Image (cartoon, rainbow, N blue to C red; front, side, top):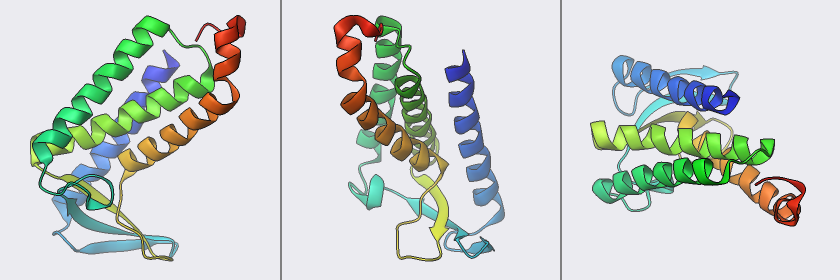
Length: 155
């Protein structure tokens, strides 16, 4: 249950901020800086990470939906209990769903976090969910999956 709440909170935060950014800013416009660490800048990403596969919105939308469906199937079949794996899956699902919603309903992903201290592509909360979720999944795989396969966990 806690994992569904975490998923819902990440997804809600992502969609609310995207709505506010797109409603209040013009594309390319910067609203303000947060502690000179990052700026809120409205960007429309018509591809995937780092604008890879630009113009392939239909394919990227299908990938998002299939990825989310696979996470649900995995969760139902395997019933994971390891907190790192569960948090990883929650964050991956929320991130994929958040960007998938954008692609399906807007035809692009709304990005808005622009790092002020380095030249890096603009990103969003969903991207953070995907990145942190993937990192946690790698940590789980390296340190806990073997334990789970040996029967010390029901994953």
